[in-house]
Length: 254
Image: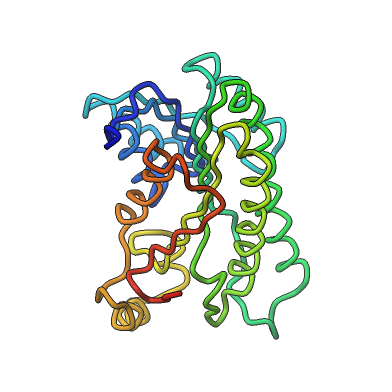
């Protein structure tokens, strides 16, 4: 069995100053990767994640960039290359803001804008790291999706639709990049506690009801999601690509 440690790999996690991204950064660092904590505005929180990784014996740096800005993305990847080396693992987790509204209430600017920004960020991040991955003959790309892409919930049309587009994008990219030793997968959580999305979309009573509908009797934690991401980011998943992992405790079953 492959050793769980991935010593020396450079992993970039977007939106890693809190929640799922921070949990992923800490876990990948604990497994031996050199971690880049990307953030857009939460510098103090990003520095806190880096400090927690460093105090545990890991290596991490924080790098600011808006993942929707091409020049910022390219500048970030160049900064990482200079500091740590080429990005070998990309975990694209950054949350793109969206409207929580019904179809009746939502405007095209709100729905179309979310679609555009979601796909633009994924496109730019992928474009930026793939050349070095291709050159090195190795890469792991993991996108964060959502169960809402397949199981609609009131008010979540913008998020669910945009993440469904991201999932299909991932399949096409996986097919094209496979011959270069690069795998591309999606981790699609159900409701996750301790995150901005959960707090915005579900009050405490709604979270309780979601937990009651879940086979395992609770909603996910960021650490639950991080473990699935870490599997796809490591070598044990080397022959798995173009898939979506539902991390929802049995809330939705195929």
